[in-house]
Image 1 (cartoon, helix red, strand yellow):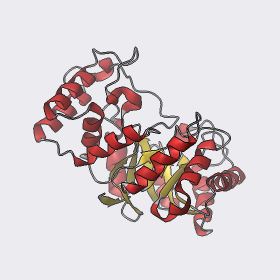
Image 2 (cartoon, one colour):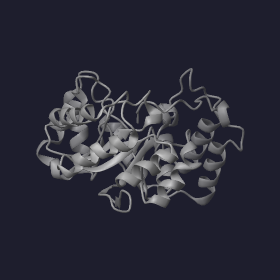
Image 3 (tube, one colour):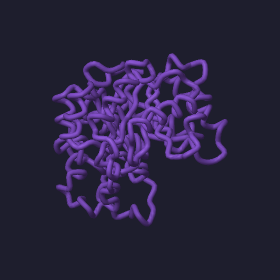
Image 4 (cartoon, helix red, strand yellow):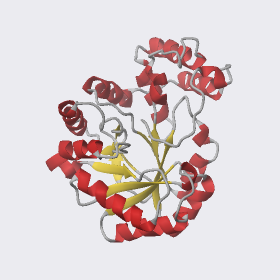
Amino acid sequence: MHRVRLGTAGPTTSRLGLGCVSFGSGDNTCEIAAVVNRALDEGVTLFDVADPSAGGEGLQRVGRSVGARRADALIAAHTRPGPTSAQALVRECENTLRHLAMDHIDLYFLHAPEAVPAPATPLEEQIGVLAGLVQAGKIRYLGLFDPTGPDLVRAHTVHPVTALATEYSLAARQVEDDLLPLARELGIGVVACRPLGSGLLTGRVTEAQPERSPLLRTLRSLAAELDIGVSRLALAWLLSRGEDIVPVPGSADPVHLEMNLLSLDVVLPPEVSRRLSEISDGTEGASADCGHPPRPLAGHQS
């Protein structure tokens, strides 16, 4: 698989990662191990192991699945949202390492203040604490999850920020307004969370994602013209936005993993790219009528 550098001074990673946010739910340990190992076999290196479960079950499953292949994996973990003290940051990092059964985290994302209520410690101090963990060898690179532009600059001034994690897909392009240009100016990579729009861009229709969605209709039409799946087309579009963007579609299903990986082989004709950009920009009447209105980015889901 083609490799890219995450940020100008970050690690080399696979062009497509794997989101593991759902790994902590259900009794699917064997299937998760199969998905992780299949991903490694196919050259996937970036594993986004944001784990909303208090018990760390998802982290444990990723750690056990990677096992002896640790050198082949780039593990990206997240702090939990909520008021955070310096002591809590250190404790949480050590708990994450314990759940993973690893001695270091490759990329550690701090939830930026806008994503959490009333941070107990100023952003600069939180970054300073994490910088100390970098010095101690427990973290290799620092990232921010859903920062504002000013917060990204503030953090980057204290310690280099390697990557930002944020929702980015055909259904959510707000990051292109100012955060993406700023990240590029600072040499910061982008980990694109929810790259399939929390299910909208897979082509499956629910009451919240109606058949009349202009975006979904256009996706289906163009996918049919190219003889590929809807999700494959959506991921191919996101990959085409730049090699500094690494999508992390999440799945515990080996079949879905294979389908997502096929997006790496898609070369979009210019006319297809134009039509996709127009519909997701709202120039064909999509906007809020697309059936999947923008949501606050306080959580993380691929």
